[in-house]
Structures are given as C-alpha cells and as structure tokens.
Image 1: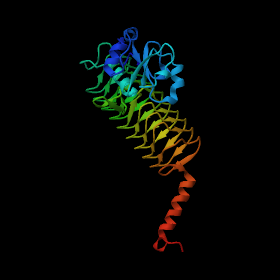
Image 2: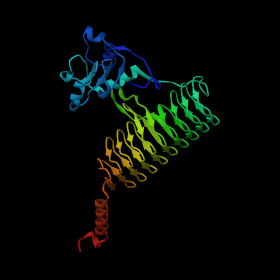
Image 3: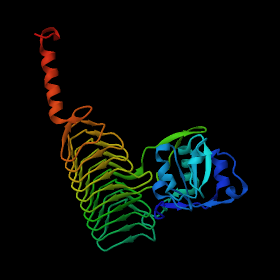
Image 4: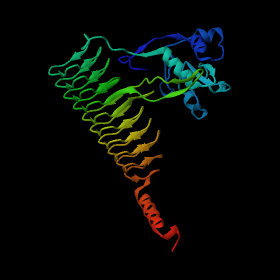
Length: 338
C-alpha cells in the first residue's frame, strides 16, 4: 500500500461509490456495500484493495492476486476469480486512476521552516532558506544547502550533502549520498490515460529509494514510482541533467553521463555504463556490466556485458561496420558502385 509517511489515506470507501465515480456498471446491493481501503496493482492486491486488469495476458496474475475488487473491461467479467467483485468499465486504467485519487492523497508540508516533529540528528547544517517538512528525518552531519526543500516524511541518512535548491520528496535516502544543486527527487512520474472528460493524471503512489554512496548531479530528475518504487543502487554515480523515470531500478556501481534518459520500468543491472545523451525505451532490461554508447537509442534488452551503440542501438561492432559501409557508399562517385 502507499507509504503512510508520504500519502494520506482517505478510505475506506464503498464499491458503490467507486462505481458511480468511475462510470462502472451498477452493482448489486451486497457488492455495492463492500468497502475497500486502498488501490493496488495485481502483484500487491489484497482483500482490502481494488486493482485493475487492462490486458487479458495478465489474467493469471489476477486469479492469484486475492483482490477484493477489480476494474475489468466490459465483457471480461469471467476473468475474475471467485470472491472478487467486478466493476465493469470501458477503460480500467482510467477507473483505477480515479479510484486512486479518491483513496489516497500526498501529504502536504506545513508552514514552518523546520516542522516541529522533524528529527535532526547532531551536526546537521541547514543553509539559508532550507525547509524541512513534517516528520522528516535527517541523519548526523548531513548538510542541507540554501533553499533546498526536504518534503514530509523524507528520511535522509548520515554524512550526506544536499545541494542548494534541490528538492527531495517521497524518498528514503541512505548514508554518504550527494545530491547536487537543483536536483529533483520524488516528483510524480509522467503518466496519463483517457478519462470520460479527457486526459487524467495517473496518481504516482510509489517512492524513491536511494542507497548508500550514490551521487546525483545538478538538475537531474529521479521520479517516484507509479506503483512500485524507483530504486538507485549503492555507489551509483549519475551526472548532471539526467532523467530517470518512474519504477526504474538501477543496480549498484552504475554510471550515467549527462543527458542520459531512462524511461519508465527499466531494469538496469550492476555496473552498467551509459554515455552522454543515451536513451532507453520503457520496460527494457539492461544486463549487468553492459555499456551503452553516447547518443545511443536502446529499444530492446541488452545482454549482460555487451556494448551497444547507434540508433536504434545494436551491438557495437555491427553498428561500426554499418556506419563504415554507409560512409564508403556515400563517398563513391554519384553514389553508384564502382
């Protein structure tokens, strides 16, 4: 369920209310009176939650989820297991988003510079204009730069450096972490779907987990998870102006040069390296020790230990051979074979 340090629960709510809110088919009296307390994806659904299924290929996951209720596409009611109340809708993803907005709300910061219930250990240094939100925790000898904002519930470890103007929310940060000026940690990732009156935002209910020894460059953005957490592994080094989207999981000892862009739900193994302006499409897996060349565009999985380049990215030797061949063809007179 959404971490209560960062999200306020607004439930429970009856399924009848959610049916009316989302435009679902009317429920019988018994089903309409049942209550749920949270939204959850299939992997985390329980009897007190409502989930959704938009693609039939995940029907087996629904069968084993144990969810109390589920939004299903109209005509797919038979996919629901016994005991799961079905709310039939045209767009299950949109219905899930509306239910999430009804059941959960991000906690707001107070009006104080340092909240009364914030916990700061010995040796913490706050720069001019720095703000520390309610229930935040900051470890010993950590330095918070001028005008930085530490959001409600955020936990930061010991001996960290948070640069001027950085903002950190919905995040758990380890020891010896460096987050440079202007970085944005824990903002909502990009997600929208078609609602009954146009596009609606999908609530981002996950967190950012930053492990020990990580460095994050100036003006880099690490989005919080949409459903699960965004995780940056121990001792990973991230340059300036990097974008890491929601649900990304970065391994230990990885390196990302400036302007790298990682799309949502990418999994990156330990020791992977990215050249400047590399880009990775969503739901791709980058194997441990893989290397992605500068300005490469990765559209599919890269096996562990391989080096890829180009757009679309492919194994580096193939890309170099193709580039050399094209150069030879372009230099031939009139572009014709000799």
